[in-house]
Length: 460
Image 1 (cartoon, rainbow, N blue to C red):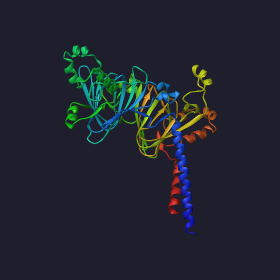
Image 2: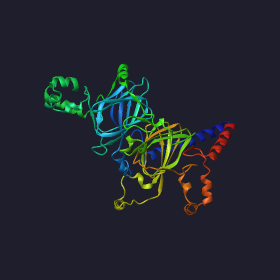
Image 3: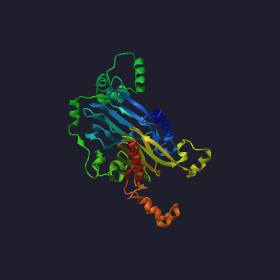
Image 4: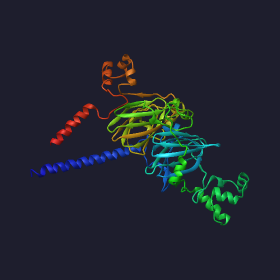
């Protein structure tokens, strides 16, 4: 009995621990579903997928919460392709900010009188203006290419339309939309030759069957948008391709790499890279910033908020968690009728603050509205890429840390009035944190206590 009792106790403790873990996991799952700021990786629409890759479109931001009404004309797409493949030429009715998450690519951009090719790699970013015909090849022998696109449509808000130049058995070229007479007059050639060379080779069949097949094909999303390309073709595309600019001032048309610049915040716990519209002409007219954040395992990006910019953040690698402070009514898509009159007058009733917390995995997206404090911790090395909307003159205000701590700038008499503690106590508390921007996610006192407990358990 003396032997069995401890064993039974351990079994009981294990069951209790397992049950509590399951409950905690269930609560976290519910929190994730109720969190309007989180878009899990499954909240996407697959626009195209075949054995060579896929294109996926994230759910519309403004359909999730009323707080994202200002994002109704912004869409987030992810392009993924296997080695030695190419996204065939197309153009869209949207401006794009393209960011390479992983892999190596050759991007070719066409103009009326010339073309420019660029070698892209992780961290490279470039703007593609609406209507630009471009094609993108994965030039790596082993690694998949992952590209993130922020799209800003120029026709219908939130609706992106692409026009494919090349035709194949499974897709229509937009050239096929023109009549026979227009094509013959435009190319000064017989329609059969134009069709065979530029559009597609069709079997001779009755007109009504061809029309029916055309309608079905137009509706189909299984077009051959991504195809295999040979090593020789990759080498041909690589000729005269330029690499991203390493200059301090970015070009108006060439790609730029966030990692070629010094991080704006950095210490042993993490790095924060950012390019703002004030420093880059490509971002200026769209009023967008681009950033990349590396948070080391067990570290914390300290609490802060953005004064003007709303940041759309994608978790690229690693796992972590964010805590965002908002108001309790922000998890409701529609407000109560008695609040609508106040909103029309430009005033929204402020309720109690609420903590919105969610775990992050690769592919997850979260949105940080302007003015909303947030902190991000990493359970493994975490890599984030963000696009900031309304970015011009944005100010990032940190609420903790030794440097750039906005709370420390408050006058002492106001500290006496604003906080329960005295101004002296507030100042002493703020000075406890010796790090800036990034810090250990485990407070020092709790970490020492945890180490003592682990040592005690090990001795048992």
